[in-house]
Image (cartoon, rainbow, N blue to C red; front, side, top):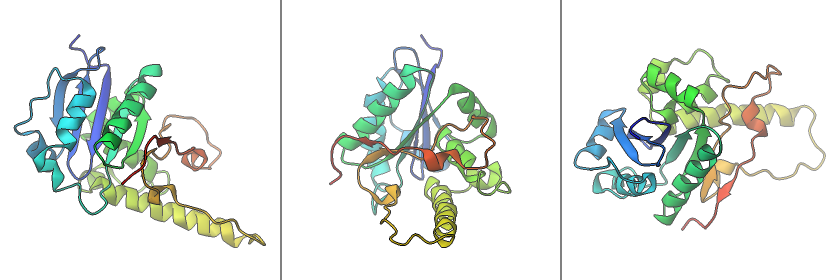
Length: 219
């Protein structure tokens, strides 16, 4: 029961990761930067059901300072099979119920192992894998010093550049207005998380990913 079979990463500027057992209860909580350590200090999370642990972290007074001015709150789940979808939905819904919009993502346990070997939280490592699709010169060490918002900001810049190139050749006679999902309110499924595919077509897989809203409205 104490063996982790799932992980949930919560990244704003603090990076925190929860290891869950087969009952979806916390067996360990880890901080991946000093800000995360400050959040965990004083919180007793071991044995809590994962949504209760997310509530404790996101609702803590120490975290509140990071959740102002439209923060980038990213919740990333690593598990396998149907549990992965269930945990991601539960984590995103918990954040929404607390009044915080978030970006949710999911990946597999193999990617979690790679994240741990790199010294990055699951959420940051998943964002790093997306970033190097556009710029393979970026290193794990550089991402370790960046906030999740900074990494995601770079990804958005590269995507915007690709969209502009596509619009230049050839120009559509009556281009339909496009909306960047990252500007939409609510808790949504994040950028593509299938980072282990073998598609060598050259087209970033995340461009084909469907954003999914987790019910409710952001206020």
